[in-house]
Image (cartoon, rainbow over all chains, first blue to last red; front, side):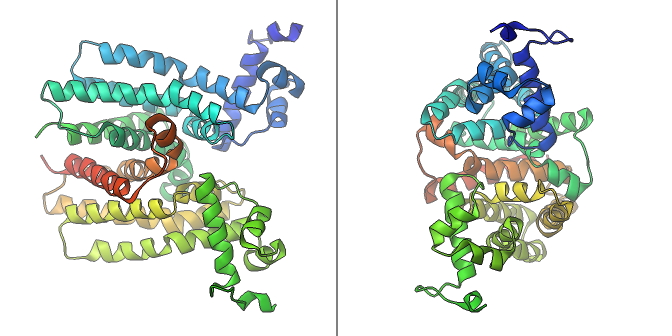
Length: 209
Length: 209
């Protein structure tokens, strides 16, 4: 089918245009509830072509997640192996996670939607491709800090959930930001202040006594 | 309509039976995507009666939230005014929030669904009834700690988002717990360990240097 490699006016492939439209809709709606009809309307691409490119919604969501977060996961390995103090690794990791949510605020909702999928195959894929590598990297950094005496003993699983939740919530609860604090949009300055806040929250709490 | 005050065999009012059925479905599915048909099937109550009692889905969701979290909000005021050290107040607050998510793991998804409602009236109601009182209580406790010299200066808004996110995430990301860590269910012991973890994370990080 020729459409598969067709480029749009700005040089995007059809698949990229569809992923961009999906990403924009999820960001605007602060929700992953988007239909093929919405995506077709937004991208100007016939919804039959969405099926052609991605099969079903799970296929589309998986490709979007890979596009948005794949690189972050690849980078983790280099961070773990880097020759820098563990506290600095935690700081970089927190900024990396928050930058990802800043660019793709629907990220964790997308992961949740895929993990709640009736096919447990999808949930396993997500755990293996995303959650486990992140948790393993965090564990390795915590262990490095415990070995060199800079960190206290801390449960890596509990640490994982509290860190990811803290990083994500300002993006997920954007409505609270708006209705309870009067802030319409997360600016780059707020992103940086939030990352500094979470980083100092975490680092002050894990240093060895 | 007589049904409004009709009690079921176990003495529940119809409205309570409907709220219980909704709560059970949301907990099982780890999602707030439930329809009146689902609730009717689960409770054995005709879906016309759901409309009679709650009007629409937003009406039902608001009543459920009020039932699940109303008491926690009322208790906050007493906590702020209590004659105990601010660190102890933060500890109690974190246990209270986590206990609420433990009992009603869909809580934050319910708040998000209501806040994303097309009627901005609903989002404002949620902010005024839930988010603002919680944020105000946290701010008052932080200020008490700064006045008595036990806490460092900390931005109460950033603190709010990081604390709520950390408390919520293990419940929200239950699929990660299952697929990445092999834990099927959040036991009472895990709830307590998680609350201890978050409490010590937060308290160690906000003590004055």
